[in-house]
Image 1 (cartoon, helix red, strand yellow):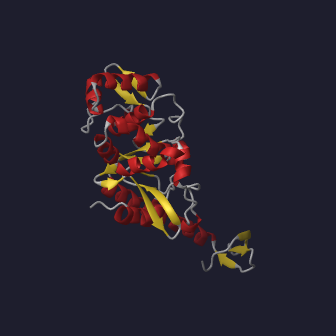
Image 2 (cartoon, rainbow, N blue to C red):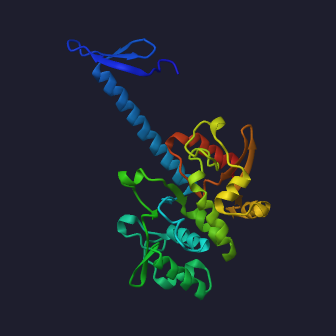
Image 3 (cartoon, helix red, strand yellow):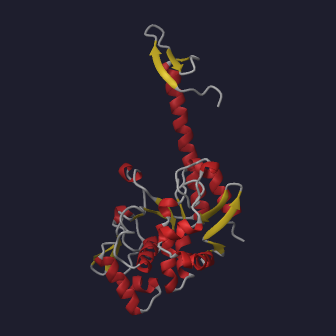
Length: 297
């Protein structure tokens, strides 16, 4: 980019207040301290404005969400994957973390345990087993007849600065609910494969890859089907079946995971209406994901 350079040293003239920026290439630019501050302020204002636009785009097109901290230890818990999926579904009914993360109706009223059992849509026995297991492993907490979500794993509401330094993504309430309600109980294990792959989902492109923070498309190292299956623990003899089963999962009539062939090879992408971790700098790519790769018919 023109006028962009690496700073080697900076000198300020004490009489004039001018600041000399001397880059590695030897070209010198001179600015007053006020001009330097003004540039920083403008960059800050631009970032804030882009954040507002991005947040509106997310809310308008994908709805409300909670933050899922995918390195919080959920994957390591000795609990069936189907039960972990049910926790992530129940978390879509969580209230704000600052209010205790109680499982609530959409009007904010706390749900009693019997309401939560109804929400799961399982037999009475499987509902009780699921809730008991989630309480036992610390993903849910009991408060009398009410249940609370562990907000260190699934957090609804603003994040503190320390939380923003952790690995997380947005999990969209309507997307996960639609997905869960259109699956059978036996498919709940398959749903959890999506969440197991989260550490490998690229923030910008939502493609499953080796370098999830890469922002240059040609430098993204996409994971092949056999590599993905190895990550989630699927035997290589069952790869084709696993792929077919994952392709059957739909959200609002659109695939949840999709193999997309392009000039950079085959990318397996995740529908952003389920989860998306990008930032205000990724609006153009998010729009492409929603309008081209995963458009709702």
